[in-house]
Image (tube, rainbow, N blue to C red; front, side, top):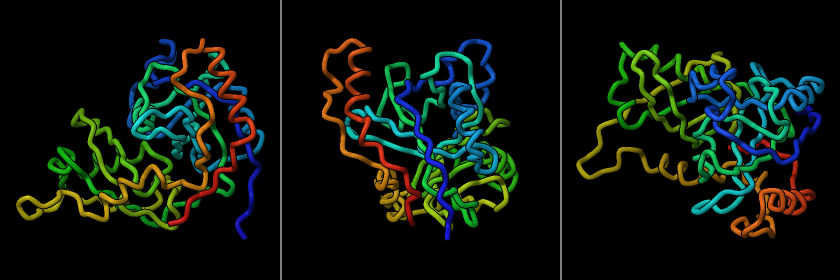
Length: 266
């Protein structure tokens, strides 16, 4: 039987991109193609005290609660807590792509809740990525190690998601679709399994660059964790409130509606 773990859920926090951190944290921006977030040291201590470690960090669900169209509903994704900061207690520093994937705009008031999953995230036994765009064009035997190093910036990988890979030696960001992972829809990755990397394959003229079953996974990627999605609050996010009034209203609406995130099944 898979052991249940101690449930930890933070209060609503404001998610800011790395670049909004003080200059003393400039090391955060060295690589934004990663799955690492940074939370306040008191919140970080909660996870440490619970012994809630998944390999090289704490893998948790980051649930955005004020997603905008076309999503317009809570949006969650697995992330790693990679460290702490000593700024405002309700601030989370995250890579900009996380905010953008939630349909939000970096720099605005984007709010989220962090929760642990109900069971430990299993280690990966299989990971397959399909490169797209320029990343696929540049992939080959001579650049394989550069791509593998970029993948090492991630510690949790979700089936059907899109990954950004910072190819340091080429100084560019490549993109890839996670086409397959095993044994669960979200897996822990510490480099213990070789990643199968596939470049774009030749398609008939006018045919899709990406296989249809992968396109379907992309369309469903935001629903991969449906078990953790809850009904939107009865708060009109676009209402004209002061920041304090809006945050208070959202807290009240969500206080009793946050379930324990469960690892989605394949």
